[in-house]
Image 1 (cartoon, rainbow, N blue to C red):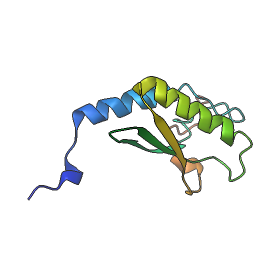
Image 2: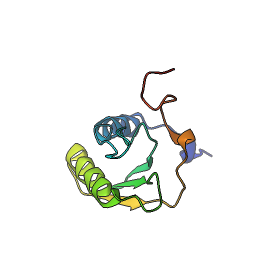
Image 3: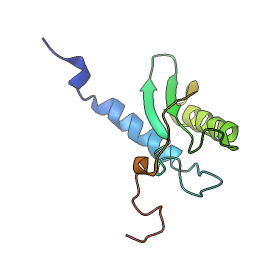
Length: 108
């Protein structure tokens, strides 16, 4: 019996990598770092009829939330050439989620 959850699909990995690089262009307007570097993109799912991105905010009442969600939805649709949807996750953001250790300041 094969566990399909452990099979790595190179095509999906490439699509996700391409989308993540595209989303890297979106900067948090208050912090000035990309949403990818901040670790705000928590999951990407390529469904047959749409791409679903799950993201979180750095604070529960982020004043830029609506703008960021719209930017992610638009960038995802443009990159994948198809419909996209953004789900706001309930996970609390912490600096440990960041992909950079030095807040992007070149201090490390």
